Each structure stands twice: as C-alpha cells, then as structure tokens.
Length: 189
Image (cartoon, rainbow, N blue to C red; front, side, top):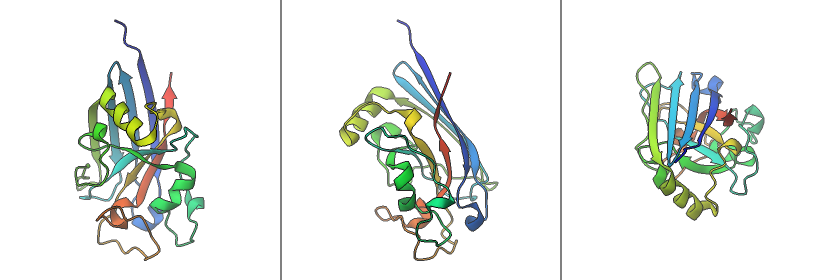
C-alpha cells in the first residue's frame, strides 16, 4: 500500500503587534501521511507565560480564506479583533490543542508560551476522526488546508483592552481570543 504524503506550510506573521507590545511570528507545517495529520507549530515573540489558542480558520463553502491585516479594523479602535477577521478569514474550524480531532474549541488545553515568549507544538492527529467531526460541523470532510489560514490568539489579562475589542467565546474574554499572529496555509510541492 502506497501512502501519498501531502504537505502544507504557513509563515506566521504578527497581527496587533503595535498594541500588544510583542511581535509574534513563527512557522507551521501540516503533513498528511496515510491516516495521520502531523501538525507542527513553532512560535516566537508571543506574550510570555500566556496560553495561546491556535486554530485554522476558513469558509465552510471552501472559498479562499485570507489573513487579516490592519485594514480589517472596522471600528477603528486600533485592534483587529476576532469578529473583524471573519469577513476575510472565515470562522474558527480546527483547534491546535491536545486533541484537534475532537474539534473542541473553548478550553484551557492550548500551548502556553515560556518566559521568552516562545512555544513549540506538535501533534499527530487521526485523520479519519478529524474528517468525520469536520464533516459533522461543516458538511464536508475535505479539510481544504490550502484554502485556510492559521491564527494564534491570546494576550495577558493585564493588557488594557478597550471595551470595543470583541471576541468573547463561552466564559473566555477578548484577552483569550485576540489574534496576535496569522499565516496563509499553502500547499508545498
């Protein structure tokens, strides 16, 4: 049996850097080999000692998602918050947490940056389980990684955010959901 290996990558660039006091950047790779998706994410310059939610976002209809820039700051408060990313990036789809295949988004099982503001994440994900849960959520089991973008979220609770910064999810406030970095996922030959 021959396994077809498919690879995707994303260069992760800062978002909201001038407002959060750090420039988060990094690299992500996604490798599909047989029934396993291996996700690797290395981040630098993130707010230190802070949990960072990370996901891929996209449109359920498969439309090309794009990364948000300062141009998405619709209310002019100087921050691009989670709702402001949706018109160009779509919705939150798959989390990069302790079990991405479960597609359980709001919880405290995401990476925490070290005191230098870095973290590395690596997970081997059972593709069949992820695809079934993805289909249940979005009506199609094709992850279409080359149509998605990655977001890294999270700033310390001590950061003063204006009331106009939205993005509360369940019992988590905008400090948890504020995007700090993003990257376009592209197929690698």
